[in-house]
Length: 466
Ligand code: ADP
Image (cartoon, rainbow, N blue to C red; front, side, top):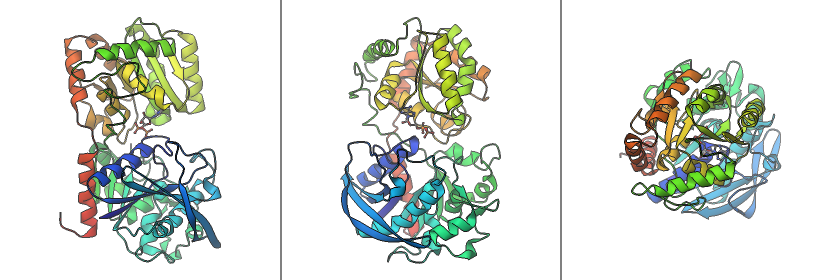
């Protein structure tokens, strides 16, 4: 079975959030199950993980009025082949966040089949992640000028976050991607614009999202970001498959970022990690540490956390907040640190090492998200014996059980968070807390089970019996 994954981010080469983790870990888990996998991703100016793809040549890709010359880079890791799409559009400081993003990723989608063909990979199924790869299912079904073996290939689309949809004028997208005018009025169109996420959902043979609860929420106007009727119409074609985490990377027993290592049978090293974290962040040791590792975006409810902060501090918590993003949230977080030195620490950065040390050195981790398709940080925290305090939404609802392996609150409000934090504070470090810690650390969050579910979907769209 040959599966092509197309993703705008793939860790460690590029990552802004969970998409990068998933686009790395799922292919590796599929490869471990014997699947032949190629991951195609943009060749950004700066690649993480000391990656130096080998340039193997250029391919011609039809785009807009002309022919792009696209560089092809390759490398192999953990049994997975990676192909990088080289074009000046991607040689920028960030992966995205630019005014011309839809055009850039239309270009990426147009290049993916040509790049795959150049490395000799003709897939059985194309797996498109999020809106950035959303034109691929459309191209496979409707485009001219595709390499041999690509026209009509089945596709799977995964929605990692419905908030980001890739919207641009329809006429432009048809022109850039050289798609026929008959697509006016198709699933590519939404509110008189081209919508690349809706396109992927409408044209893919199977649509997956990253947790069963999020699959249900997507049909709800409160969560669907305008695409709820599109999702409601999918019926059985929409499947929720919970993400795993990279259990080698996230393992307190072998984590090299930590001051001490520990496991479920002996958590004594965790106290050392807490002391080291307090030292690193200049927090006093007057109470348990509440960690947060997040993008600073409205979705994540960090405004709720900051509104709750005075009461959380009254309960005795110390806050270790690592996050980057929204300027106003950064300002508020910096202000909170200045107001409570020794009790609040805020680091505005994307810092892998500090993230590991917060997961290990904190007692609890707050995830007060307004919506959360799956969420990885709460699962990572559990593995480090750090009990998550989460809002009951999406994957948070599916992975945390109140008073068993974490704490769950319903309303997206500061007061609901304060109430759950108080329950956690009361239980902290007692016998019940230890039992919850042990249970949280014992969960199998490896990718194997999820990978098998994806393989079942690939077989389905290939028309092969399980
Ligand atoms: P999302 O994909 O919405 O950002 P997830 O919880 O699914 O949220 O994934 C977040 C991933 O990114 C986790 O691996 C988390 O540790 C990591 N991460 C988020 N913010 C930071 C940061 N500021 N520094 C380091 N890692 C971060």
